[in-house]
Amino acid sequence: MKFLAVSLILLLAASCALSQPRQVWVREYGGSPGSSVYSGEGQCALTDREGNLYVGGRAPSASSASAMTLIKYAASGNDMWVRQWDPTSAVG
Image (cartoon, rainbow, N blue to C red; front, side, top):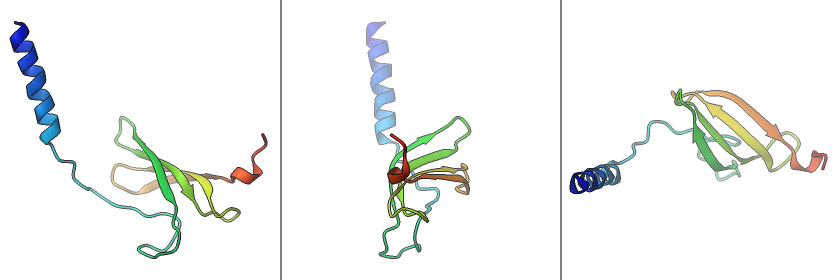
C-alpha cells in the first residue's frame, strides 16, 4: 500500500512538472505598447476562484513617476479596475 501511495505521488509530480503553461493574453499598462518608454513593472500576481488576475507593481501616474499600482483583469484579459497610490503622499 505504501508503494502504491508513493507511486501515485511521483506520477502526479511528474505530470505537473511536464505540463507547460500557455500564454492566453498579454496586457501592457502605463505606456505606449511596445515602446521603450518606462511602462511600469508588475511585481506580483494572484488569481481568484473566478480566474480573475490581480497584478501589483509600479507604474507612472498623473502625480508620480512610480506609483504603487494594483490592476484587476478578468479571466478574458479585460481590465476591470485600476487603483494607484502615490507613495510620496502617504501619511506615515
